[in-house]
Length: 302
Image (cartoon, rainbow, N blue to C red; front, side, top):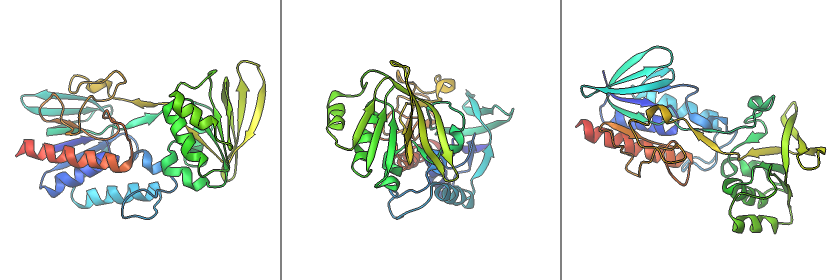
């Protein structure tokens, strides 16, 4: 029996573990993939206060080791079900394990939607990125592509246009789906070009990573090639919260509809990080959620 069971081993989940352990609680962290979350894919991270520069992989390793050194137990399994039975939570995994806890923190994160093209997974972190705030500076003076046309894509393309020599926006529709004000600001940039009605049909890669994009114009049927030093995907995020909708209300987009206190409508269940409804999803905001959720769980236990 654990005091706190945390589903998710990203910055939110591991920060929650650290705070829970420092409060004298027993903690189990269950992570379905790799500890550290999506930040582990960033080649360099320069926006963590107190750390000038660190690789995402090193940050993930450091925060995992910190939690384990404090006494966190960890399991590499996928949580698929959480039930509250007689005041105790039973956490079941896809692998067939069941763990019991007095409280549960859901720090499930989100998945970036990808294009599903051959070689894409291998290029993530080697030319393909998802966060201009995190990785844009590493392409200063270079040529990049932004794939997508919503608000996130437009905002990130604007940011990239300030540091990159050239930004090519690839949008599969005839116009942007983001705010007109953002679109107009982007179109005014001299170093930005836009391909509408165009999809990425393939990636070209060399020894150092991504070298270019194969493009297809759905309107004209024309195929072309775009040489780039990097590409940013902004084709949406996908929460995976549905299996836990009976524990915490979901908003129309599938995120946990929970406020800054990270408390759900189920006593003893808390949420933290990118899986929560919020406007900014960064490593520092995820860690902040983790601290808040852990402290709330400790108050509940005490």
